[in-house]
Image (cartoon, rainbow, N blue to C red):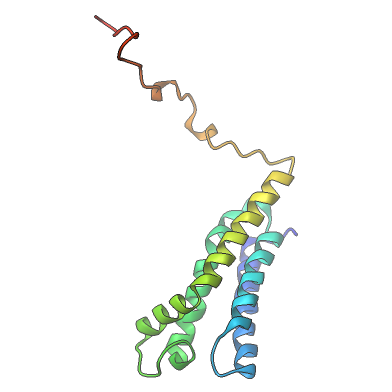
Amino acid sequence: MNESARSVTALGFALVLSAVAFNLVLTESLGVFFDLVFVSTCVLLAWVVRLEDFYRVTILPPLLMAGTFLLIAAVAPELIARADDNVLQALLSGLSDHALALVAGYALALGTIWWRLRQDHHVHVDPMAELGDTSEFVIPRTGPGHQRRGA
């Protein structure tokens, strides 16, 4: 539960490409098995990455799926699209066919990161901390019952 972003990225691609290979042994195209492994991989990666490196895991699911489908589209487009589709068409067909898995994997990975940040007592995430003094962002009230400045 303390892996670097680089090793988590490599693990993610290894697991997803292994799922592709295993799925193709079972059937002639990518199906539900691939989707389930993809979602599980996204959660696993969010669970094992170091908290300092969690940013990469928050952007990894779409890159993982797009990278995998780009490789498949270049080598064997008939696995995710029609055999006569070009690389871009095959990539878009694969992404649209597996969009539910992508959304689920992404949402669960973000939820896992959020939960880990909430459980870790040493990491305090304050989104307003980077803004510093926010008093300059306050909009003065005007209208009935409020006095205008300089009037």
